[in-house]
Length: 251
Length: 250
Ligand SMILES: Nc1ncnc2c1ncn2[C@@H]1O[C@H](COP(=O)(O)OP(=O)(O)OP(=O)(O)O)[C@@H](O)[C@H]1O
Ligand SMILES: [Mg+2]
Image (tube, rainbow over all chains, first blue to last red):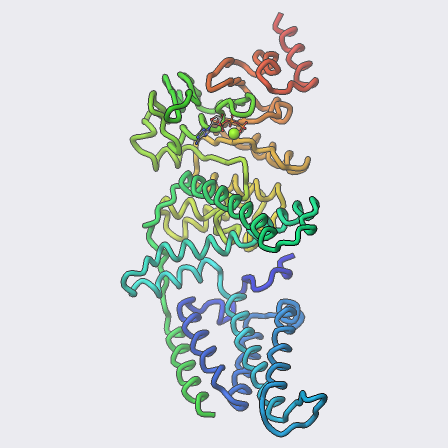
């Protein structure tokens, strides 16, 4: 059952699992940024890095394909649109639409970059508990003035928790209205408002109940955040990633 | 030893008639009490007074000898409350995080939280699911998770508001088993339900409410005959058990 939830944490004991979540966020950001600039050699290196890390978190290839099946379509769209829009020497043309050599190369690179960013994100979310992500964000935001980091962390958690609930409410209400022939109405705005208003009302009701339940379990916004500690390996990882990115940028 | 003492409690919404009217109630440590009554008779409102989620204008509530209003945190730790809709009381992104929520709020250190959570999940039989996001659990599992979230705060009194709604038969049985276990471990239990059959075997005492007042209060099988007069269905099996018990007494 656990395998069917996309981008969900899987327990493990590898290097990535033990790494400090703050450090993972920083590394993920650095790697994603440099991926967007990198060319073929850099992308090859990053793919190699991804290969090593996949072994570290023990993620079977089948699971990766399964989790990313919807992104495949997205990558295809990116590739095709690059193919068609990039000017250059045409290799094939039909009725004024032409696919260029440059377009294919650019399209492949773009799709590769995007795939790497998504895959790195997958590694991050598979190896980090949602709660640790929340704690890490709280710690990273703490030095920023005028940012209520505790409130943001609580909100992040509740969003992750309640998005599926709100989606299923929406589906339920929309089904109930289709059962009463809302499709027969021509005006799309009227149709939308019939859906959006009840969903909002249900969500507000639910958030009131949620607030009551949190209060009855002694919720206090100013509770101390769980401690995190960076060990030597974490600093090493950051340093390696920084060097990696500097090397990567020109190639 | 009285764990709950309510005296002269009247709760009214501004400008309206009272939702709770002059409630007097004492509950002994370890009792299993069923509260029944028609929709809108004030059961949920009464329960919310027990841990200070609502505070009445008149009257007082004491938990374990201390006024609720004087120490809300203590009252909320002592009185665990399980609400009608499990989905909107589960706050964690995973089963584990949800159960950890209460102990963390109480300021327990990390290792203790982990120990308490694992122990509690074991009690309700959810240990294998602890890394899962709550939205994929079944109705019965969600209800047990809600119970675990409350148990992790080691309350003395556990209040269930309509715990059987929306559950299939196995789900109902799971919750019943949980209640019976808690009762045998000397927890004080209050249950609001329309389904007397599910709690008849466990209950010591039945309280019937109507329009914000306690109209009947006594040993379960003595009071149960009056249930239908106050909008609560009296199942045949419970009626017969009641008749049998009165006959035995005679
Ligand atoms: N915030 C409020 N404002 C106005 N009236 C309220 C409020 N909360 C509750 N009531 C009213 O108080 C009465 C008692 O409500 P309560 O929820 O306690 O009943 P209940 O016995 O739990 O009913 P049910 O069996 O439907 O759960 C109802 O008539 C309800 O309309
Ligand atoms: Mg109610």
